[in-house]
Image 1 (tube, helix red, strand yellow):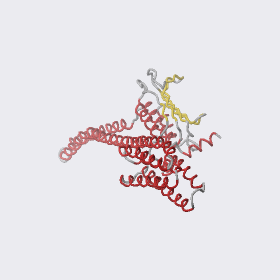
Image 2: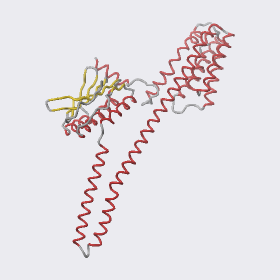
Image 3: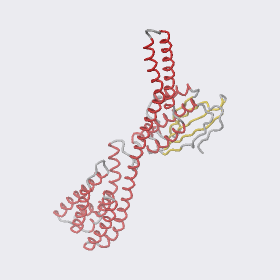
Image 4: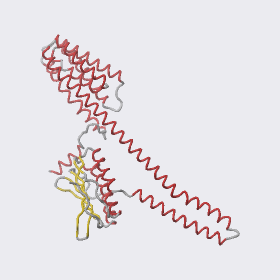
Length: 399
C-alpha cells in the first residue's frame, strides 16, 4: 500500500512552488487555477441571490449575464497576467475599470449581495497593476465600495471594506514576491551561463598556453627538417625525432589539462547539490565542507561523481520533498573509508533494476577501490558510496 501511495505521489509530481518555473503546460494550468480560483468563493452571495427568485426574469437574466462578463474579464486578466505575455498596461487598466463599472451597476440594480464583487476588483488591482498604481487603485476601490454602500447597505459595505483593503494589499505583496523570485531565477541562469562562458575562455586560454609554444616548435623543426633532408638526412632525422618528442609531450600536457577540468571536486559538488535540490523544491540537508586532507584524488573524484549521480536521480525521478546528504569517515577492517550517503523520502523511480547511471557509477567506484549500495529504505531511497580515505584525520560530517 505504501508503494502505491508513493507511486501516486510521483505521478502527481512535486508541489506547486511560488515563483518556480512550470515544467509542463499541465503544471502551469494547475498553478493558475490554484492562485486564481481560490478567490471565486466570493461569488457565493451573487449566485445565491440570483437563485433566490426574488428578481424578475429580466433582472435574473441580466444578472447572470453581467456576472458571466465580470468573471470572464477577471479570469482573462489574471490568467494572462500569470503567463509569459501579459496584457499591455493600458488594457489592464481598462479591464479593471470595466470590472469596477460592472460591480457598481450590478450592486446598485440587484442589491447589497453583489458588493462582494469589489473584492475581485481589489484582487485584480493588487495582482495586475504596477505597485505604485495599485497603491492608489485599492483604496479607490474601497472608497467606491462605501459610496455604493450608501445606496444599498452601508453596514455590509463597512464589513467588506477591511477585507477589500486587506486582500488587495496582500496581493500586491504576493505579486511582488513572485516577480522578484522570477527575476532572481533568471539572474541565476544568467550567472550560470556567464560562469560557463568564463570556463570555456579559461580552457581556451590554458590550451593556447600549453600548445602555442609546442606547435610553433613543431612547425619550425618541420621546416628545418624539410630543408636538411636532401643534403643532410642524418640531421633531418634528428629534427624528426625532436618533433616526435615535442608532440608526445604536448599530448601529455593536453591530457593532464583535460583530466583536471573533468575531475569533479567533492566540495564543489556539495555546493551544487544545495542549489540543485533547492531549485527543484526539495528541502536539502547537506554537511559542512569536509576536510579532505590526505584523501586520494581518485577517491574524492569518485565520491563527487557518486554525489552528482545521486542528486540527479533525486531531482529527476524520486518525487521527493526532502533529501539528506552525509559525508563521514569510518574505520573498517580494510582501513579508513570515506562514506557518502544520500537519502530521500521519494519513490526512488519506477525502474525494476539499476539504470545505466548506477551501473557506470559502480564501475567508477570499483576502479577507485570503493563500493556502492543503493536501494529502498523504510521511508524512501538511499544511496551509499564508500571509497578509501587514506590516513587523513577525521572528516567533518553533518552535525
